[in-house]
Image 1 (spheres, rainbow, N blue to C red):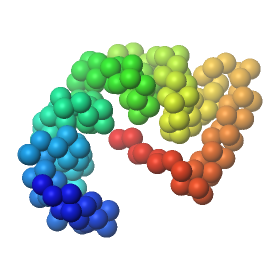
Image 2 (cartoon, rainbow, N blue to C red; image 1 turned 90 degrees about the horizontal axis):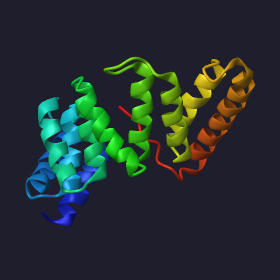
Image 3 (tube, rainbow, N blue to C red; image 1 turned 90 degrees about the vertical axis):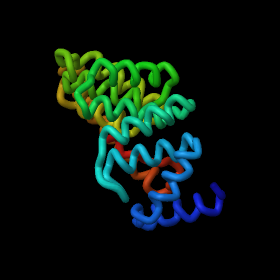
Image 4 (tube, helix red, strand yellow; image 1 turned 135 degrees about the horizontal axis):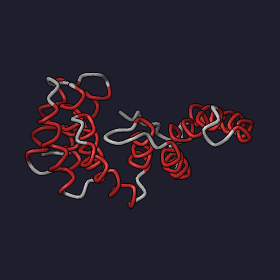
Length: 187
């Protein structure tokens, strides 16, 4: 696979033409590119440029993860979560959390907050959100601030929650203005 072909696929995809980008990404994925395996996984997972197929997404994410792609492993965890395979999702996200991968740390907090496959554990959710926020995950910073503001860390800390939320808001504005960080939507 020529790098020019992949650059063209990237350009097509960035311009909203996932349908034309998909064959190039898939060819590179079949040739063993772990990055393209991950991209194809997300395209199947989201139904971008190809029909939505969660099992195909799972297969491509696993291939990417086996090749050592940490983002591919995260995608695999997202598929397991979507399929309500909570123990497997928790295992995958836990391994990624040990590697300090912020979206996985956030996802562990989200799973605890929502009670995925277990009872809701707000204190553990707060722990994971705090850790993900310390790693730069803005969504975790927001969730931690909102939960503090709602009194989940105790009524005495509600004013702290207000401060945390204002700080989050200003950090978000700075990121939007300078564009120095990529804000990822966590599915």
